[in-house]
Length: 195
Image (spheres, rainbow, N blue to C red):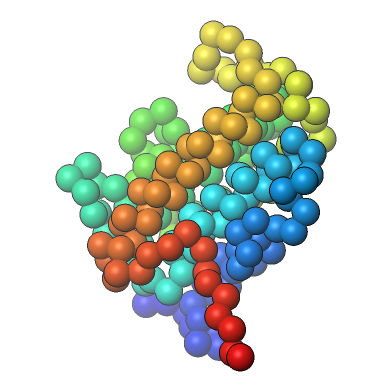
């Protein structure tokens, strides 16, 4: 059972708060001529927002419903994306990610465990995004970091491209899962004219 506030579930309000202004207009004004870092960051945000939008309007059972033979769920994909945002941006560039309550090197990061709430996982994604955004804002694109799980360094530019690709890939998975659940499609809310 979800707590409803003004006709929306609490985590739905959280999702709306996490989405940046590019949620309605997927490419914010000025992005097309911005500098490289702003373009890369805006592209990542567009896909991050699509991930969150795929959760809106669904109940906990739908968010946790395995839709593939491997058990892929919408909420599990959000948990995974949160853990890799912390890994590629925060840990790789010398920051301290929050302590994880699961093993990100196993399938635990792709599953919403029975004791994990939708609010917990979406808030985790919000904190991971905020921590990653601080790194993206503070460091130049040429900054070098070394992932603990790799034997080579990467630039922030590479990490931004990699995470945009990974987030877009999983947003595509989520698009298919969402369509299978309730028929909803698209990559962002559509603005409709009342004229």
